[in-house]
Length: 231
Image (cartoon, rainbow, N blue to C red):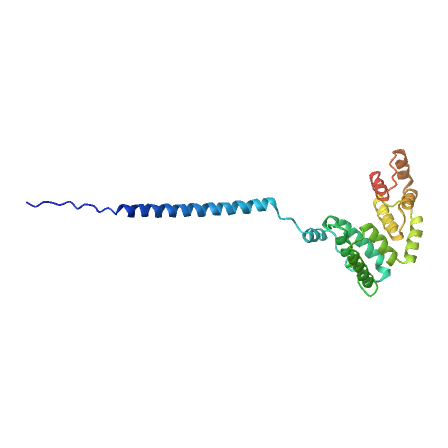
């Protein structure tokens, strides 16, 4: 009689089972640890970006503004062309004002545009003085300084003569005010004198309305703005 012998399934030794379980546990732990490390890195990177968001540089803001108002370029020392270049430069600085962080950036942007044997030498000496002293002029002070150095006296006298007899007449108010302000800058008139001439030369009807509505202003830019309001 044949006896069927069942094959007994061989089980690994107990200590081998322990090692296998430990191996699987270690592997799973490493996977989890690796996942946690990656998550931590991602969170850290995200927090850093939120804490330190990228800020546009002065150059980027500056270039964006330049697209709106064209850079007047360099003044090469021809005093006959100074008035036109100077007015354009002041408008350009005003249009790009938010791009300048401090007096240093404004002063270097302006002085670096002075070229030629005379203007360039002046700019080089002036920047060296400021750099050595560690003090840079404000935009208002720099404007006065440059105008005194480069504006020919004859040109200032001509502008002052023109503005005294420059009546509005039938001219559009916006055109009159624009030309008046240009002559005022060119002639280097003081604020009080310029306001007085503006009120005297504007259309009498507008001047009358200013008095009646008590809108007179001693500041030239605001006085000019009020002329637009009454148009």
